[in-house]
Length: 580
Ligand SMILES: Cc1ncc(C[n+]2csc(CCOP(=O)(O)OP(=O)(O)O)c2C)c(N)n1
Ligand SMILES: [Mg+2]
Image (cartoon, rainbow, N blue to C red; front, side, top):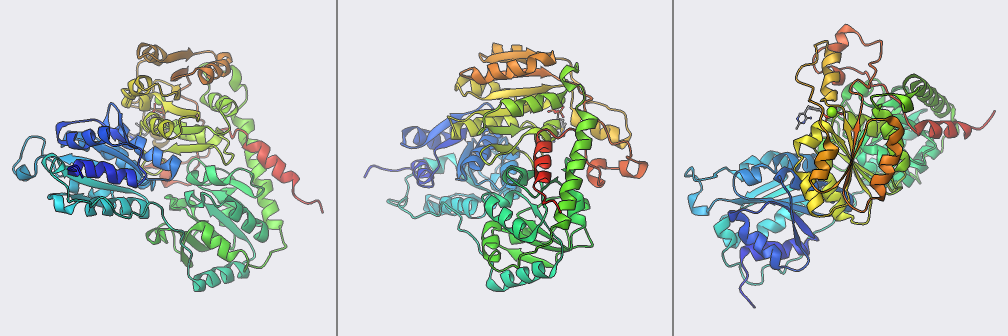
């Protein structure tokens, strides 16, 4: 057999782990790895303009496919740039392995050119971060990294000095058996029995669902039907739970809407399913709570629990469903469904009047038209900032669409690089980046990646010439907006100059046709919609005490706004309530 270097072995093992591409930027310490990728069938190099974008892209790919994805950076600054994207992937529980190339092993600890300590640097945003200092550590360290990323759903980092990457690998060592999928976790029988008892003993039960209910739509609906339970969700649960849901009472949290808060507070038992929802101010403290999570370390870290259940949401519900007694009384559910519909009617009446004529263009109008025009299986990537609000309120999930954002890490500039990863992973799918102008300009070099690689990503830019989310925070905190505005910029012209299709929209009557044109266009397109920076109404009853500190998260206030097509769903659910 021909000589295999450590770099070759990295490429071969990544292929065996199901990795099809590595996002990054080359550099001398990384050359043995990139050269191996060039020569190894089944794996490609995807060149980006900023390593952070490569990490975001890998995280998005993993979230779309559910499989391991990879990124890489060269020694020192090259891999340092990965860090923010890796944080995001890690906190989104996306399995990603990062190859952080390192200075020559003999120079570590001498203050050498580009020296950092990547194994330390990445410790906080990974399950596993190790330095390979001798060829004998391969392939076990890479295998361990892969299995941490896959098994614990998150990031692993392998720090590989360039000289070691070029050394001969132990013969035949790449022939190893790898774990590439996580098994289902079913709680112990005693826990299932306890959960069943707790539910049976309760009059009113509400379910609160997070991203851990991915793939459990049927089971959640079956349990809600059996218990006549309102079903609330967190932002990350929305795409899995809100559609085809006769029990929907909306979303909890800062961007929440509907009757989620009431349903969770007026229940006897709250069942939290696969959610690590961070804002404990929105959780009740006088209701019995059971929490089901695949990560035991998540259990009870947001609120006091009466029952902690370690397991997958789907497996747990499958085990509990045949055991729990049916509850015939649907009065609580019906009351919450009515409350929900009323709340949505109120929001629509207050916020969407005349938006189709409003200049500057109302962002909520753009989001509602986007929801109508986008494909039924579109992937939306959503920038942190006001786009989160528009996506939460206006994108209608259907079980086939996906919505990816930086929902746990909360980083700006995620949408465009995540769109690159989503489009690479799903070349035939419509991928739409909902970008803020602050977010887009932060990693704007990736426009060149999209154009250069002819990725047909559609960027819908909410161009309000401001960091509007922060404007809002300052307003709520009672301080004057400062450092939040940008000069008007024609991003459509920039997109055209980069070689893409660029459309600038200033008249609301042109929004729909511009989106249609972008979707018809067989290649990358940017629709630069000039939107109103002051689009949000602060609820009038915000008071002094609620406005201190990190005001929005410290209060139970939700940001008000329209609610898109959710109103129709709520109205049709009301029609399902049996007449007395
Ligand atoms: C990397 C990073 N820097 C700063 C912030 C703080 N921050 C949160 S949202 C936001 C404004 C985003 O502006 P833009 O992308 O234009 O969206 P808008 O809110 O205006 O719609 C800022 C500065 C952050 N979350 N991430
Ligand atoms: Mg903005």
